[in-house]
Amino acid sequence: MFRSLRSRLILSQVIPLLVIIPIMGFALVRLIETRVLLPSLSRALMNNAVLMANLAGNEQDLWSNPAYADYYLTHLRQSISAQVMFLTPDGQLIASSDSSDSGLLGLFFDVEGVAKARAGQVASYIYTNKTSPSEIIDVFVPVINQNQRMVGILRMSYTYNTIYSELVQSRYVIYGILAIGLLVGIILGWSLALNLSRPIGKVTQAINELARGNRQAQVVARGPEEIQLLAQSFNSLSERLNSLEKARRQLLANLVHELGRPLGAIRSAIQALAGGASKDPELMQELTSGMDDQAIRLEHLLDDLAHLHEQVLGTLELDYQPVAMSEWIPKLLRPWQGAAEAKHLKWRTDIPSDLPVVSIDPVRITSAVENLVSNAIKYTPSGGEIAVSTRMEASEILIIVEDNGPGIGVEEQEKIFEPFYRGNQGKRFKQGMGLGLSIACDVVEAHGGTINLESEPGKGSVFTIHLPLVRAELTS
Image (tube, rainbow, N blue to C red; front, side):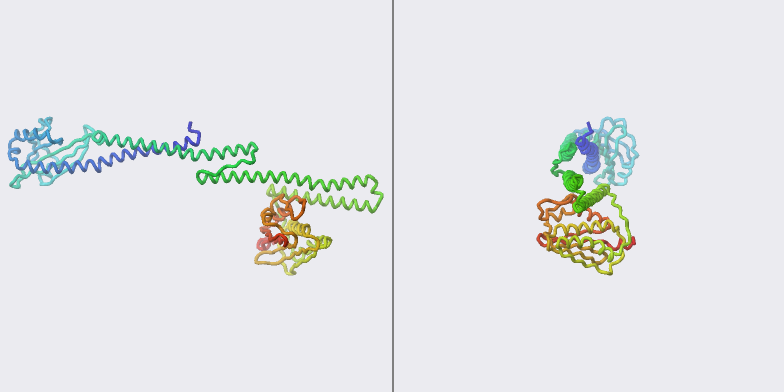
């Protein structure tokens, strides 16, 4: 019954009320009884006792004639609910308004109140009757006659059976307040439970739909902040899964495309050789050279896939080696200069001769730089210009690859470093698997650096690799 979140939330609201409200009710009753009712009754009884003592002081016969005193109290019993006793100055009982006290007549009361009254003081006491669950208020007042002489002591007592029997209406009011408080608590608990359980149930339902293959499952963020955050996290997860699914399909399509062309070219060359092309040395040389180019293309494709596998496993390992940047970068760029000139591109480099020796993984950084240079050559039209420069800046080494090709739009700049993303770059058919820039970014970030892009459509692009010198110096 109490396995659901809703029922437990309701209990979490109701149980404290079941405990707190009765305690508060009992405390309220005791507060009214001890701090309001009893002091009020005590003051009223004391005032009545003082007034009666003043009246009794003028009745000389009350203190000399016990029969008259009993007659006086018998008539007084009809008008007051308190018990009245007349005592001599030394504490002997003369008369009592309670007929059951007839056996006590003539006895002496040696109590503190008598002693204080004999000393001329008004004494008031509140105590609990041991024989019954009731509270008693006792007032002792000295009786002074017209000659200012004490002729006796008046004792006035009031007994009542606690506030539960004395204030019946108040008891029902308190019970009503307790019931209303519990009802309001249950209603609030039910409402809060619904406000929490409904959005959680919707998130659970959306998760189940996602598990069953519904990739479009989304949740409206409602309810408390934590539930809204949960819904937003689910929506982000759903979008991420959709993105990964699109990337997976794109990867398969790219693999088919990228593997199909070199394999088709190699197969065509093999068929040509099998058909007698090997008898023509020049044709054979051309075919074997083409097969080698396609094999190199496949090798690069395998390198990209190997790096993709490392991305998935998170095991990108670096082999740091000391590298003289002023000598290493020109050697790295030399083959690409020939590729640029073959496409009739202007080639310009600016490599200072005083660059430091740093510790990097040269193979990995070579891959990153070559990806940037390769893209610059690929997308810059004939007659354009490629510029590669290196410089020191604060605690970094900057490797800058700049071209004046078609540039990259703002909307594409946000996605250009994502795996499998291939920009149009003015081409009708997209080229490559979309892993080059992603690989370059991962390699540079593994070295503790970053890659920045500045581009404007029609004005070219500038890719800048930032490699920290601090880490290189510590590992050199």
